[in-house]
Length: 396
Image (cartoon, rainbow, N blue to C red):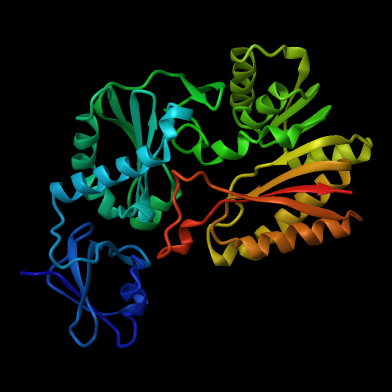
């Protein structure tokens, strides 16, 4: 018996534009005995076939579409074709020439909703955030492990979004070997240690690769402040570009220890760095009160807003931290500021940062608008996939 999802009248338009999500309120009825992760056919109220996707009874996103082709079955061959298309796109980008780590699969933008796959040297690290991806993760891991040169496939499905799907948080080996405690990465001339088993996200912030590579941001900088530094990538790039002094601040001692190791790995003298463990907001206030100032400040905070309901509070957080940074920046200095909150649109982020600069009594120019690296692609049909917005500003 087929499992079919029939939509309410007028709720088919987003699927006709190939947006892959069907929310619970758009569904009129479900026929068959669809269980979590099962494949269902989606129909308009008039019976028109629209898409085929994975059913998620515990989530507000009730179905995530795998395909918009009625002739395409969801089986192992389907995932083999999707992964092959992902590899072709990354080969076209030439990411392997600049780095030994990149994103192979970026969820909905690559036609594999709820599935993230990152390549780190000889290992793949996967994150499965939906019941559909969970259903097929064994097949995906088997396909990845069969690639030449792959030593292991590791799972980092420890993201909170799994809880909204009724899934537990899990980590562990899916195929082959477990990655080492630390793996050396190469990124546009940087050498960096990454913790694939316990580090942030899948081990490293691959989406910031191109933004870290912009050496011109640090031209002439004597003092650089790198907030939420994690493993220190932005700060190390600044030091390599000539910064005399770099302050790396993070709330986690483990992150600062990794940042120290990464500075040493790149041949940088420890005396060029100051490492501070603490709350960034409090640290910036202490710097303000002590009348400290910097030539370059990098703000790359964790996600402040996951949903629209959290957006107002997130805006206050982004304004507060950018206001503090603007007060600490020397005239003519550079502020690199980012939001990785999917609910925060680029337009709203520009407004929030602009309001912060004005309240600090600073005028500014946007040198460039920054975003996620192209191996984290943006789909024309899935605007929600645009989650990282950055601004390079010069404040007078």
